[in-house]
Image (cartoon, rainbow, N blue to C red; front, side, top):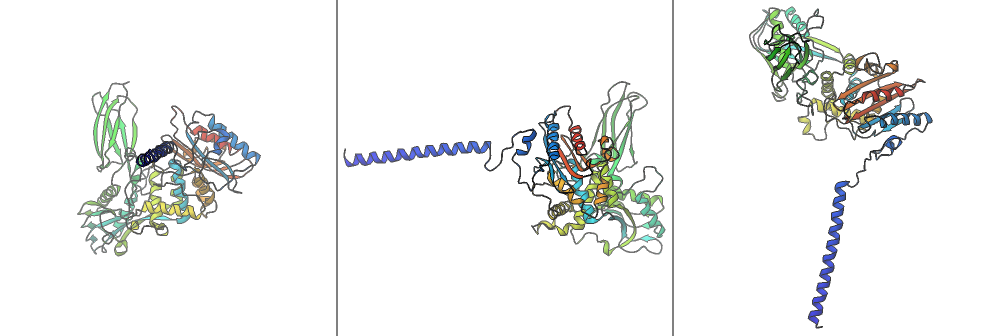
Length: 547
């Protein structure tokens, strides 16, 4: 073989070896890519285990060791048995139970993973607001003018109805015997001798900065009372009640009226009365950016009437119009119109400054302790959102954003959530895996862990507001959203309920048979099994804690 042929052969041999190596490397890389899609690197697999295996799942790093006491092991076995033998054993279950007395953890099932809390989010909002603002904190709503009234009782300019987030401004009490909050303001203005306003009545909600709806709220929730817009100028829960009753004859529209009566909401009645015994097919829709309520469908003669509670769009403007009417009734003439002003309308320098105006009248609301009790016992969304924004307004500077530019546009709801996070960190509550987006739990973007919720409850027992917070929670078998649940607990459980579609939760305190106080959080997500509810299972678990 000549040198040229020999050289060529070596080149071919080396080239072949290189090509073979490339093929092998490609196969290895391809196999890794396939495995990577099936199970990302460094992410623990979550096997669908049950019973005693549940606590062997890959969990986020835990800062606790489960109690090895025989009674606590027995409790864990019984709780896991309840869940794993139920029709909802394929749902996502998370729970955390700890002793307030000695800090031992009795049970933890997926306690470090994020769950949609529903209204258990209110535990975070009310607890931290009570601790930081104090149970005696009160809101105030005021009437202002740029200058003092003239001797003849004339206000030369606008009358500003200025809200600071007061949750309990009433249109009228349910018994109809007491004046509305706006009527009280109008009376005080009349006593001061005011008889004419030459300008407009301005409903000013600029005290709060931020969006009018919570982050992650569903569009088809916001027309109902539980999705009402949180405004610094809130009145009557920012809602109206729609009463629907049958007509007298077939072919006539059903009888529909609003409570309170107001022309701020426009009714479009497209219903039809049909013969007795026919099904009712009533539909209701309020536009997302207006106050036009359309009602359609068939309503049978002799059918049972019903009510629907709807939210009001731009409640601050509604409040201004209601005040204008209260002034007219008392003989105070208003030459201008009812208008609205919010934080988005003007720059910071142009925004209304109460310090440079004349306060003509004011009204104070209930204490934060009283509002927190109503929020937790009856699961009120609007009031909890106002509490969150108040927390951000009052304490937001203590929890600044790392990005100084964001502070220029951060809403008070965002600031309130930052304050909550800081409080959790300062209290040793693990908050790294939490995703907080509102104060009420209406948002589907919220994710909290059972451990964080349980440890928050335990931390609150050391707060000056501990007793008021605990008393604000529904009492088993007695009041609030637990009035018809857990009756066998004989008031040994106080806890906040939470319910959204496919989601239920219960977090609070339980007293054991020997008087030990436990903090617990039980959450169930993805409960999509037909004709099944996790509430009986949650209640059965809670009852085990009292034995």
